[in-house]
Amino acid sequence: MDRCIVLVDAGYLLGAAATLLTGDAARSRLSVDHARLIQQIRDRAQSETGQPLLRTYWFDGAPDRVPQPEHRRLRVMPRVTVRLGMLTRVDGRVQQKGVDAAIHAQLTELARHKAASDIVLITGDGDLLPGVMAAKEHGVAMHLWAVQAADGAYNQSEDLIAEADERQLLDRAWLTQAITAAEPAPPDVPEQAAPEPSEPPGIPLLPARTPTPGDLARSAPSVALRWSSECGFADPDDGIPLLETLTDARQVWVDREQDLSVGGEPHEVGRIFAARWAQRLPHDQAADLLDRLDQAWPRIPRSLDSELLRYAARFGTIANDVLDISQDHRKQLRTGFWSGIPAEALPAPAP
Image 1 (cartoon, rainbow, N blue to C red):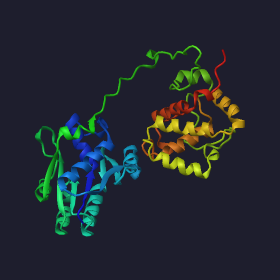
Image 2 (image 1 turned 60 degrees about the vertical axis):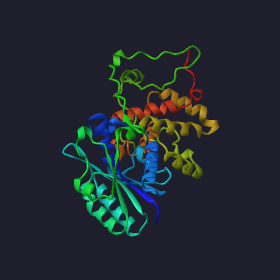
Image 3 (image 1 turned 30 degrees about the horizontal axis):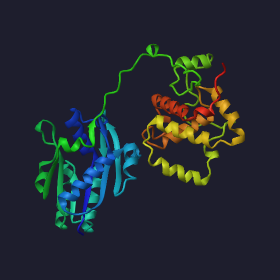
Image 4 (image 1 turned 135 degrees about the vertical axis):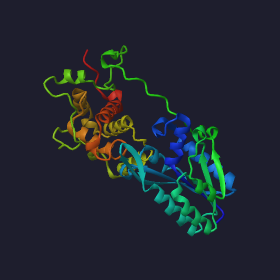
């Protein structure tokens, strides 16, 4: 079949790019425009093989194989298929498990079925040598792409390099069209040094800032300084309707489609959840419910808070189980929740 297929070992591609651009293999140091990167790969594969692209397979690891934000973005792109292995921590280091086996299986299966005349492989893993050899025996032209190595070091198996039919280098200039070093996070500012928010004339101050321990102490001085729900599961005992009770079957389907394009950052997830909840309140109850919500600030009512945590756990990046949601992520989720309540919906504070 006269067409090409690309197999991307994301751990190699992004890890080697991070080493080249930042001096550290940690992918968190990178800012990646995945849409642009996929388009670059597609254009280059078609140019270098002279064949139209059938599909790009993106192989990566993820905790419990739960798709991360980048995987969620990638898997809805045209002609992109995401395959996930496990991401585990061994002796303090994060390691992928099952990714190379998945690439080997996909490579040999595509070659055996003559799905393409040319296969582009972006990896450095010598364990894939048998798969490359088998693909060549089935008449497939194997193209091996390497990421430019830092300081002239090798980042690919020598045997793999020798076995490939064609070899190409992804150099710094090519990579940085879509991959750049992430901006360093600003240093933490001590809480006492943070300026108090001001209220512009005529505009009510909304509770969109992060509640501090001081806020909590002033709102409920007799209770422990903690959030409404610590585990994410609670009986709806406060009379606040849950989002699921306000959502019909058609909206469930629409929500799931929209969630495919949600990156999964905690603040974004909290904002989307709150906006849906506020928009679907019954008109005859909305004013009363929003007034109760306003009175509860900076806390979120217990049942709604627990539903927010369960919703957030679907995204994988926040947690693979609600019990594992960190306090920092919980704070970001709840801050996002308050930012998702429309300004005009909240009662103005008393003068």
